[in-house]
Length: 435
Ligand SMILES: *Cc1c(COP(=O)(O)O)cnc(C)c1O
Image (tube, rainbow, N blue to C red; front, side, top):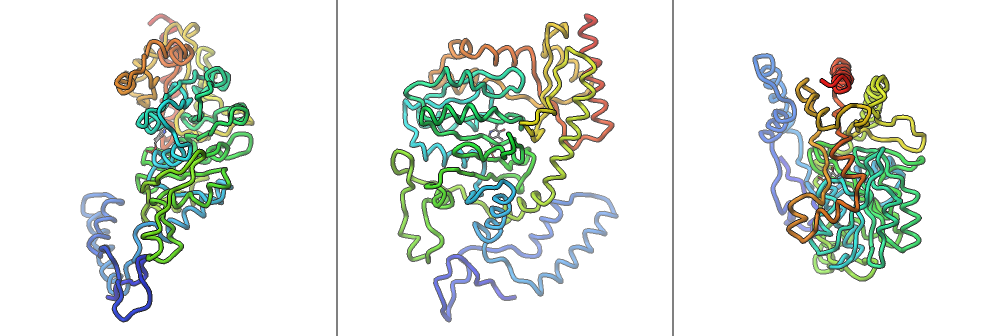
């Protein structure tokens, strides 16, 4: 079997090629991959698997290994497919959303003392980088109907130290981006959209994650779309930075030039206020393939999520103590990564903690939901005063303690969705009856 010589580190035509710096995979490995991705047990499974294994052995005799396993044509094809889907140019496929955020944060040359406005409720990934470099996190209060950052509160929290605003489309519901972009323009701030939940969602006809100066999606295994468990896409609207997006993913190296050049020609990346050092957030060819395959059926995935959310919201309208997830806003096309369930505690005769307990007893899983980050120990460790911050985010405290939870929505059968809607309606009725 010929070994592939089509390798990035090929140094040119020669009688003694450098076929591969690293290793490849063989038929045995591929069989294990098949077993991993298509699991089963019992005689029927083993028979079917053995038939496949025999064919893989035949394939092994007539095939060549890919040569490239990292940052090659599959990654490029996935990027092209994403650019087409998102209506962007020059997006970069990176190791995960967090790695994408880092590039955007580095572009802003974040330093100790710089302020970054983030929503009071999100996942630690949103804030890990600014926290790690000693920038100051400023928490914006939430819109009570979406659990997203409230632009009016963002405006109040802008100071002359503010450098960035980081809206998070939590659960895949669009943040009201227009006022955020206006504030950014007025105060010369960089907007990074945490679109980890929001791949394919839209705000006023624009894809979420493509409105700010940067946007990053997550293809972690729990998100709407995955690239074999990990991955992310970073987009930018900064024309001057676009040519550096892919270089910023691998130490600033330019793979378009021969190895002799790029190996030693390592460049700093241009940030907004000065140069920065790029790290490594490369992706593999298998991830590229995985993302492209998911994209091919992504419209169907989103349509199923939407239909499920519409069903649940329609059912929950039956009790006016329940505030169902909004599915009708013409300016907001959510991805329904999570279903946002809210109640009005005054009308429901109790708070969401009681509702959560009742749902659990009835066998309805809830997503252990995103909480106010300023209550986390890690923030205390870095000197944040949680009581002081909580006082600046009263809506967030009320939402978290009394009003909202997230329900699963995708992959549920019609029967499960019906059971879940029934359980919510019954639980709230019980609370109203004082039970
Ligand atoms: C999952 C998640 C991230 C991080 O995504 P990774 O791809 O795992 O880095 C960021 N923000 C939010 C809100 C998330 O839920």
